[in-house]
Length: 100
Image 1 (cartoon, rainbow, N blue to C red):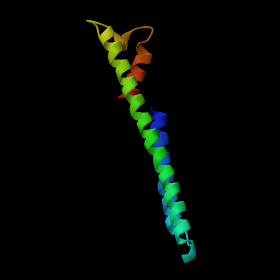
Image 2 (image 1 turned 90 degrees about the horizontal axis):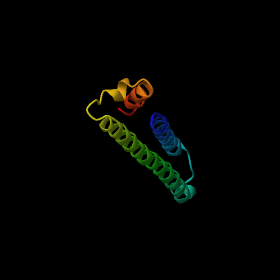
Image 3 (image 1 turned 135 degrees about the horizontal axis):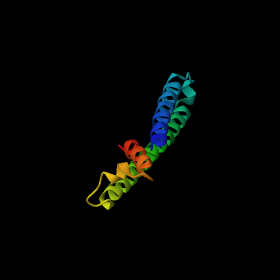
Image 4 (image 1 turned 120 degrees about the vertical axis):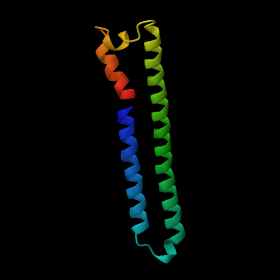
């Protein structure tokens, strides 16, 4: 999930830089329509990719949260075993704190 969030932030910065570069670009009056269409299509694509990666991030977050909840519930009357189990406890702790 952290990798996807990092991608979102990096992609968002790239979209902002791209928008700034397009807005700062000098163009002739004859190229206004062409420039506008190019700018619109490029930014639309960039923002769509950002939206898709955000949706994937949310879905992954929900899946990993549900996994942690199910594992804690599966421990029955000893939910602390999720964190203290000798075999999986340290991995569960890592997973839990990454999700949270």
